[in-house]
Length: 212
Length: 193
Image 1: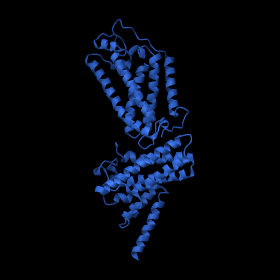
Image 2 (image 1 turned 60 degrees about the vertical axis):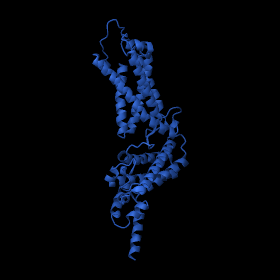
Image 3 (image 1 turned 90 degrees about the vertical axis):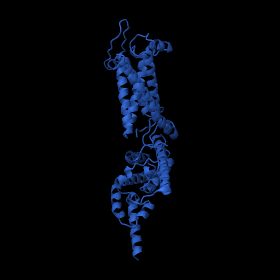
Image 4 (image 1 turned 135 degrees about the vertical axis):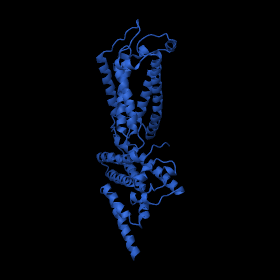
């Protein structure tokens, strides 16, 4: 459930970030990025203490499993070994994007990322340029992600519904998932919000970042 | 005799026009429209940085003249942007450098005034690479009012920079940034260097 919630929230926030920055709502864009940062921190931690299918250690496998999977010899619930690479790639790409956004500033210097005060004006401007370009990397990964879902769909497996309802038909003999603890989720969320709040304050010794 | 009288009238109008920046910018640009509809003084007013309405009504420019104005406009905008970034960082820091803010404010004030001459007809995208949208020349009154707004707030910010009151500067920074944004949202196209 936390995994699904985070997934759909991030999907919505990416769309919102794109829309807001193209319609001159830069302040909303920045807050959207801060929300994504919170979710990324949550997801990172949940990958260590969450449900069995959420754990990095349970689904991120070596090349041998990826090959076995491609040859059709893989059975389990949650992400496939190849799908895991996609999860990790999208996670890293988003983390890079948020990091660039935090130190960036807009063309006019009216809006600045919360951590832009830690770098020079030139670095901030450079970060903005890369932030814009990097979005194409994220778009590419999203396209791949959706293409994979369509591919499975054509082969008769519907992946979207389980990602919404949390219920999937699993083959007999597959070990079931272990649910995460609700209080562990709360702690992860609290840490995510706490770190984000610290970043919004302007980080290390608390500078005086103002959203605009 | 008659020409002396005309010159004196023009001089009065100029002074009145400049004074207008200090009181509400909407009024001043309204006032200028009626003054500038009189035939003789227009080009001179624009050259003196008198007001925005005039320069949009100036006969259009082309060729090297247009290129020179566009270059000056681009460099001036870059300079203003850099100055704004500098003062924004100062005002965000624990220990704002008032001297730096003051010189940034002076740079913005100077360029905001000069901007009256930066948008003659013929310096849009048809003349070359620019972030200036054709809408500028389709909405001359609105554009002029927004430019007058920038000039007003740039002056206000500069005056508070002279006093060095950081809280007042922070408040004035928001209105100044708002004046930049008002025009950029509507009249600037995305432009890659």
